[in-house]
Amino acid sequence: MLRYTTLISGSSGNISYIENDTDAVLLDGGISFKELNRLSDVMGISLHKVRGILLTHEHSDHSKGVGVISRKLKVPIFTTYGTWDKVHPKAGKVPEEHIRLHHSGDMFDLESLNIETFSLSHDALDPCGYMVGSGDRKVAFVTDTGVVEQDLCYRLKECAGLVVEANHDVDMLITGPYPYFLIKRIMSDQGHLSNLDCKELLLQVLGEKTKAVTLAHLSAENNRPSLARSCGEQALSHRQDVSLCIASRYKPTEWIEL
Ligand SMILES: [Zn+2]
Ligand SMILES: [Zn+2]
Image (cartoon, rainbow, N blue to C red; front, side, top):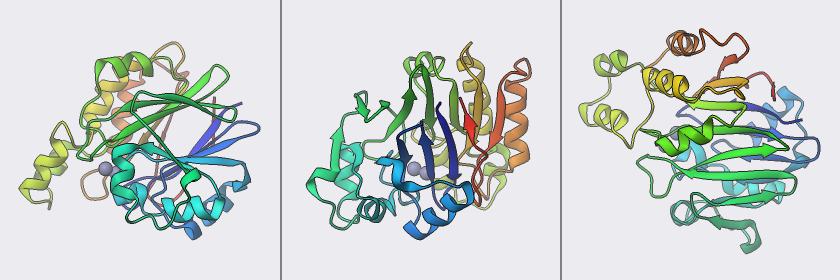
């Protein structure tokens, strides 16, 4: 069994929970410990199974609670050297044994969970994406990236679960309230995937093993869940066997079991 839920997702905070029968891991820590407890209660999660936190990059919507969550749960933070350089001044005291640094591309085991890492293309120092596997099932988390390299596409085909960014609708972004420099940043190769980027990515990576797709990191100002969903539905139009859900800024997704 491998199952997961994205507890919340978006520029105000990001955190997902992934578990098998015996162990669990958090992906990112962009909320307070209090909020984590509240969301965990909603899903009936008891956090004692958590063995670590995988941290993708230093932006505060992913990292602001990571020090506190690590201290409260007494679990290590796994992240890249560059990300930790940026995060540790703000994370408070984290004991040496709870700092586990790696390079993008490394693989390691976290108790019974297998973790694979890959680099992302984002305006952060050393951003890193993660795949979490158990047995022959795995789920990949691909958000906060302006592009997805071909190598990664091949690897995503092997994942039963895909959590993929659908950050903005390009028309809404261009005609919306954001200043020009920010629009350029978001649309750049180090920015975020648009709904259309997301659809094109899905069309490339849907494989025999794909079972579930979650669209994540939707912008509040420059996207609507209905627009993201429609891009997802177009990509999945020939795949009735693949489930689709949209991660929310306010509440957890349903459990997705692979
Ligand atoms: Zn983000
Ligand atoms: Zn970011």
